[in-house]
Length: 303
Ligand code: MEV
Image (tube, rainbow, N blue to C red; front, top):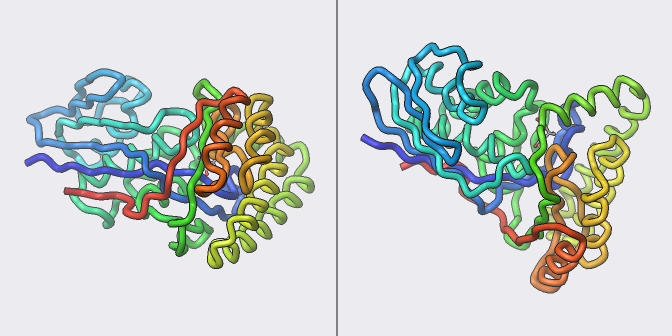
């Protein structure tokens, strides 16, 4: 029997990088998806995706598995499943929209054959084994869908989101999240006091943004996202291309910032019907490949 699981990508509205140091973050799932199907197979694991098709025995050293298939192999191995895995993703890799987390969540959901029990743990263990110290925020929102506040004690589903559209612009090129996280670790080491002060500000922004979300106040939510961008630029995870798109889209939207690890990924701008198309135009004129995306409310689906 074939089991099919679909998980959404994500955008981080506030708190990336700082969440690794305990500030929490607010994230939303987005209507871009990765679908993983699994069918039992004798004696081996076959993984097929846009990167090609590979076959392995259970217990194969992960170093021998091509990087993009390692997390899925890790999950199959842990569960002791010989299976034929097909990965079909519309989420561009390496630009901060949650392609790895969506893949891990969908793979764990398909292999466990369920939406919740054990999926978060299996997906996060795979991400941490392959990519290092992920906070778990991305995994949590790809699993839950909607808008969440992710914190030390887990994640809380927030209301709203129907009014939110994000204009998204890729600056071009893929980034490495582990490298960006490592660069921030070094920045923090050089100036622990300055970094903690920024964390404190992020905590304040997250608290205020929750109230803005509760009351559907896009002007206030956008202003907090723009404030967050200043703090992200301060720890060095924005770059010239992103700065240019942020500046252009901040003029037409409610607020703009990078999303995810930065260092060559995506900029998001908060918009609604009144300013969506002029913000997309502004992003394109500033050099971004831009599109609009809305919030996914389902999270992981398994059938
Ligand atoms: C990456 O999408 C988000 C980071 O905060 C890393 C993490 O939370 O694991 C940069």
